[in-house]
Image (cartoon, rainbow, N blue to C red; front, side, top):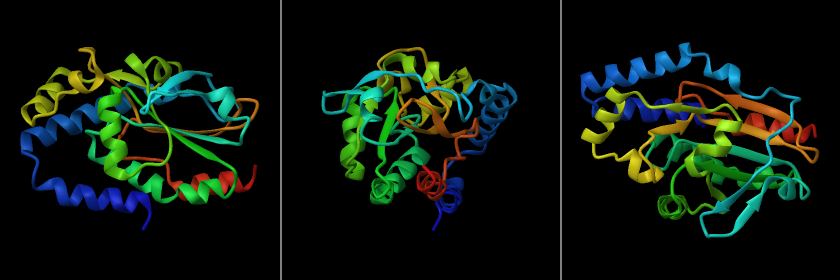
Length: 214
């Protein structure tokens, strides 16, 4: 089953559990974000990736320019372990890890979640790739991905028991739109996928096709 099919299944399963007013707020927030034109800020294929050094969930440091010397790097920016679609994507990426490695590629996930919560995500999905802490979304901002959650959506989240401020270690209520990049040795971007609608994610099989041609 493709990732997009799993996401659609997740949406069907959760539809009845979300109050109607919450659905309207979430739908409007997504539509407004799409209309904002944020996707236009994302680097295009052929442009250069922004280099960075970030802390892995285990406390080690990971530098993109060093990692790409080992082979192509797949960067996956996600909202946080609190997001059901992100959890589904991370689990699916882990299941495809050997397919990526077959073509010499390494996978790196990035989110603004503090290491404590990132570690929970790693354990939940038995993740075997780096999950990096992008404090205050500084790296995600360089990739044009960051936006502020609208107040009414934050209120919906808080009523459901989700404390984004606690997860991110600040009260800015900023998160990245989900995005995936394939970066090669000279920092050139060979694949870019980023959508304002958080239900749309890069298909791992498409990433494999890109890796085959490198």
